[in-house]
Image 1 (cartoon, rainbow, N blue to C red):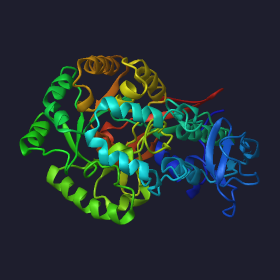
Image 2: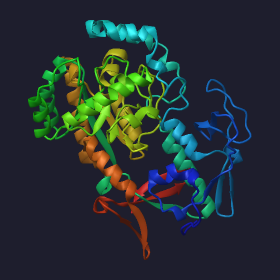
Image 3: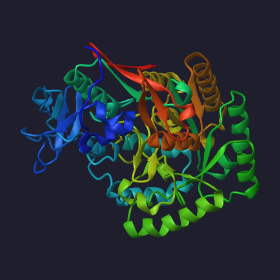
Image 4: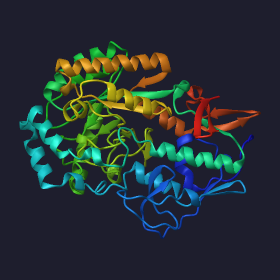
Length: 453
């Protein structure tokens, strides 16, 4: 196969086009799925999706699922999918598939309200035992896939492979995921939960600076502690980043719509006061349908896979994506608290496994390391090992280690760039295009690979 495909790009693949920034005329992918079907889980080859596939029964994730792949039609230059790709991808990214997710149900139970009422009185030694008990069956969950779920990326790759077969081509140009052709991205973030954690922030910045790794600090605006303006100024003066972390971190932010609206106003005011463009909720509670009340450019509250978090689910992607006007920067690795106190592991082995899975397709490895939980020397030593490992990846694999607002700026610029033909080559046009690079999706025997032009 050779050459470049031509054709139309219906709206059912807008998520795919936005992900790759493909020229719209290069692929022709259409949906055969009627809107009347009820939503449910189904398989697309090896990937589990949630949507309204055509002509199959609806099953649950606990049993063998019908595979729609044999119903794909590739003919006359067009790939016909038996489901709506945009719907299926959005159902993953916004956790529509997860029972209770998106409705605040995960935070409304009496037991959780009691827990968060007494939580400030409980030390880590007590809390970790309660949380281990609550999460004792988390490993039995089949979906999303632990320890990293790449369903969104694998689905996009599978669809593009079919589209290339339909068009008779073996590669397609796209705008590379990261600036200057970086092979992947790493973000380090710190949620500050207590006054002790706040007091440790200066030493934490020293540790990060020892490996030239700048990070973001998420500050709780109310009740937990008082943040002096001098602390905020120091963080910014040292070229670290400040974001807003919840309102008072009591676990109730998303428990009630009116409560959320009332708190969102205060959270937005705190964002102005902090000079913050980003937000993360406490304990990663979330409801994307309510994001329109937040005046932030980006959110960092949705985990890739939430098996060890209070609210189940996960966005099943290792890349940023837009929910309305807000850029979602997902949490793609295990949190330090869960690693140390739930799994009882004091090593970077699991982090390294996750990093390998994420960076293989040039993804985003984002971390939450709390200053509160690495004051102890045993945990701090593990964090120092992680920093050294990340620095080695920057040198050996050209990984972009940066701050969330840099990712937000780049992803917004990239979303407005266009790939245009210039003779026999392709060029990127638009604001910030001097940092952009042309990449190719290359069809292989087992799927696709990504390569820089």
